[in-house]
Each structure stands twice: as C-alpha cells, then as structure tokens.
Amino acid sequence: MINHWAIFTDNSTPLAPLADRLLNGPQPEGFESLEGKRGALFSTSEILRWMEEELRHDRKVLTRDREQSLQSMSSGERKKALFAFILEEEPDYLILDNPFDNLDPSTREELREKIMGLSATVSVIQVLSRKSDLLPFIEKHFYWKEDKLLGTGKSETALDELGYANEPFPEALPPPPENTVYTDRTLVELRNVSVSFRDKKVLHRISWKIAPGDFWELRGPNGSGKTTLLSLITGDSPKAYGQEINLFGHRKGSGESVWDIKQHIGYITPALTDRFRGYHTLEQMLISGLVDSIGLYTLPTEKQRELAGSWLKLLGLADRKDHYFHDLSKGQQRLIMCARAMIKHPSLLILDEPTADLDDHSAQLVVHLVNKLGRESHSAILFVSHREEPGLRPGSVLQLNPTQRGSEGIILT
Image (cartoon, rainbow, N blue to C red):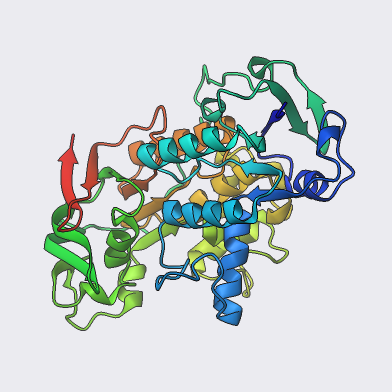
C-alpha cells in the first residue's frame, strides 16, 4: 500500500526544518514507513539552488539538454524541468512544497495529472498553504505549526476559511513624501510591439496604454511573455529599442537612461525579498524605499522616520519598527515589501506575483492592501499573477494568449 500525506502550513513557520527531517530522518510520528527510503524535494528553493549553480559555476543540470538557461525560463518551465529531473532520479517518495504556486491553470492541471499518475508507485507528501490545492488522493492530514507536526484528521480542521468582516487596514493611506503632478495623460504606451528570441516568437503586435490611476491585472499562461512585457516597461530589455514604446513622457531609445525610467516605478517581486539578507529593521526597510537602496546606509531624517512610522501603523506593525525584517513571517515580509515599493507613490506600481508562496490568510491581506492602494492613490497599479485571487478588484485586465506568432493581448474590462 502506498501512503500519501498532506501537511498544511502557514507563512509563520519555516519549512526547512521539516523538509530536512523528512529527507534525512529521523522520521516524525506517522511517517515511519519512510525510514530507510530515498526522498526528493520539489520546491522553489530547489529551483533557486540549481539556478545558483548555473550562475556561479556555469554548470547546467536541470537544463543540460537545452540551450535555454533556468534564469531565462518562466516559472512553469522551471518547474517542469525540476519535475523531469526528479523522475529520472526515481525516488521512493516525493515532497511537494506548494507545487502549484506560480502556475497558470492549464500548467497546474498538467502537473496535477502527472502527480496523480506518479502516486500509484511513489509516496507523496504535499505541503500546502492553499486549501484549494489539496490533491484528491491524499487522506492523511497534518498541520505544521511552530516546529511541531500535529495530526488533524481532516483537512477542514487544518486551515480555516478566512474572511474579514472589517477592513484590515482602516488607517488612511500615508501621503507621498512630495506632491507629484502628473502632466502626461499616458504613463506607458506600446504600439504593435512584437518580440522574438532567435526563432522563438514571444509577443505579437501588443498595443496597450497605462494611464495615471489605472488598476490593471496582467494575466497569461506560463511562457506567454508576461516577464518579457514587464521588462519592456522597466527598461531592462534591449528588445524595446526600435519599437513604438513611450515610457513616462519619453520615446524609448530617445536618450533616456534606465534610471530615468525606474525612478517612476515601484516594483515588487518575491525574488527581491531574498536580496535583503542583512539585519534591516522594519523602519530601515521602508526608508530604503525612499532612497532606492538595498539596505539603509545614510542617517534617516525625522520626516523619513515619521513617514515610515505611518506605513507601519497602517500595516499594524507600529510596535515592531525596530524588529528585524528577516524575523517576520513571509506574509508580513510581503506587506512590508508592498509598502516599501509604494512609499514614494510612484507613477506606476508593478506587483509581480505578490501572493506567490503565501498561505490563504496572508494572500488575502495582500489583496486587501493592493485594493486599498488602488482606491486611495493616484499611482497606476499593475498586478501580475498566475492565480486569480478572490477579492482583487482591477479596473481592467490584459490577457496574453499564446499563438504561433507570439502572444497576442486582449483587454478585458
């Protein structure tokens, strides 16, 4: 008989100690059947480890048969490469750490079918923070909390349905440090933009406008070109040159620097969090958003401290201003990163997968905060996600639909 387990978790308890024990023993109570067997870990942390191997040592493992590197792949393509590598290793059991995060619905279903097939011969341990992701063949349920593994019996008692009768952020949105006047009616405009990488066609004749105060959601399956499209807006892609792209009052390629573009943008991506590995207090984290630095290396002014304090009060973290960022839960860290990106009230706030790897509770808090930013500021917001988050209220949606000519953009309202 093949045993399978689900371990529900939230973002307040690190997973690494549990994964280490499940892989290396001694096995926790209820998992004794895994003793002496060989396991494998399917997780974002494993993908990051192999990416680091490629970057530091120029050694390709997951992509050894491909020209493309892990760095240049979409989230879905990276997960497919890791899954294929794990299958080649033929483990006795497989730990799936939130396997469906960062995946579009069709890729999620494809991975689900592969796991279902594998479950006939390989034990599966699914670690998850979203109830809707629970695999149907798993009947043994546990909860990982405060470094303890607790049996729950049924998944319904592992994670409660979360909702808010009241607004979780009742304080008014703090004002910008300086009054900003928007003289342009359009912040970003793309006209018939197409992008290819060698013989791979990525985007086809995309036309799109972002105006001050807009709230957009960018959708599309893995590999549809969302990351490429963002790089055109942030100035990070050389593919923008020679195209009809206007960014913040300048035609792309008219002599503007990358900094001229980025000074108008607030940006958050889960990977950015990993760059703050030092001892940064919450106050320092927010003030670093005012000076655009990774860490704070100058003495902050009283005005900067007051503004940071207002944002911490909004987030319900005013009493923790001197606490270290790395001591927060993943959900709290994500809220701080959103506030850091927004603290200057940039012309455009780009939220790239802000709910990735979060549990239901933390994701809902981020959605509440993003909706508030959309209601109470003049910043344009661009929310990018593979998962349709309940309660998110964008004004419009740009849907990227892949074709043989590259992805085409369809605007949904």
